[in-house]
Structures are given as C-alpha cells and as structure tokens.
Image (cartoon, rainbow, N blue to C red; front, side, top):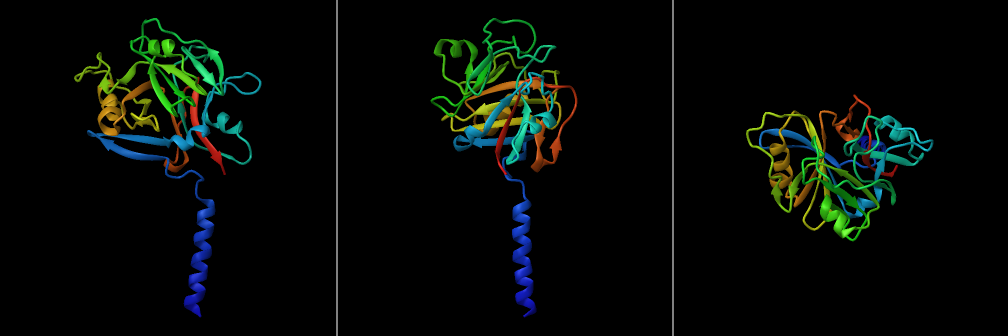
Length: 251
C-alpha cells in the first residue's frame, strides 16, 4: 500500500512539474564551437507564425526592452525568447527595412556607407513568404521583392550563399559580444545566436557556416546584443533597444 501511495504521489508531483515547466522549453540551448560558447535558439517552419518583431507600443512609444515586450502579450501568451534585431538610429527607429505583421515602417537601404550596416553586402531577414525563413542580400532583395510577414534589415551579411563575408579577417582584433540569425539551405530552420563572450566577425560567421550549416546568415549587432530566454534564466539588460525579435506561443 505504501509503495502504491508513493507511486501515486510521484505521478501527481510529475504532473504538477510538467504543468509548471516553461511552455516552450527546448528552443534555446548552450553550444560550444571552435573554443567559443554561444546560446542558440532554433525555430522550425511550423513555429514561423509565432515569430514577431516589435518596436513601438500601441501608443507609438518605443518599447526598448524585454519587459516592455512582455507587457504587450495577451494573458495566455508567453515569450519563448527574444533578442535585439537590427541597427537603429538615436531615436530607436530602424536604419533599414522594417516590416512587422505585413506593415512596412521603414524602407530598404541599398547604399553602402560607414559602420557595420554599410559594410556591403548587408541583408534582410524575412519570414512568411514562399520559404518560411530567408536571409537575402539587400540588393537581391530589392530585385526579387519577396513578400514578408516580418522583415528586418541589418549588416553585414555573415554568410552569403555558403561563404563568409569577404571582408572578415581571421586575425581581426575587433571583438564584441555579437548576435545574429542564420537560415538552413531549405529555408525550413532559423537559428538565432548570441555569443557568450566577445568574438570576431570571422569567428561568429564560422559558427553559422561551419557549426550550423547555414547557407546565409545576417549580423544583428554587437556590444548592445541582448537575449531573453527563460529556459536559460536570462533577461539581459542594458542600453535601450530598437527593433526586437522574438517567439511567442500559448501558455
């Protein structure tokens, strides 16, 4: 009788734990590649509708952080992960193309210039078109004009058609905590990654190219890079952010 009671208590406890586990466990994980540590959050094609892009609240005020993003969610929604999603001006407006829920709020920029954004080729991360996920070089994006449910432009490209950006140097001394997104060759998988420590562009690009097998990958930013991931017990804070990308689901 005592054994049966223990078994019942164990089953009840297991059910309670299952009910209280994060609704979207298993999306983000720690990985090591070539001597560097990263957190990588992986989405497949079925999860694409849950991916969202945020900038302002309903009153037009910049959200700026993960806490404010969470406040926009419904009572039955949970934020699985989020990170900064592209470069922005001093007023937090996007530097390049920005489309959220099919509504374009900033135009595509194809001209080169200073800074990482202008280190051509740069690119656009796009979802919800003919392929669930795409990273497309900006000028090719302009020519093809693909439909996107959400899109954010940033730069530079990390991986272009299976090759590293030509300006990345193996012996570079430019190191930052960096984050970005890569897409599988069939467009069915998207990987969102952030480095644990400061890395070079070359090291970060190789993570996507050789570590994950991405055909195309895009740099989001460095030094301001932030991650929200309950399963990693992280909610990074620091400078206010412009565009923020993240995955939501029902609780």
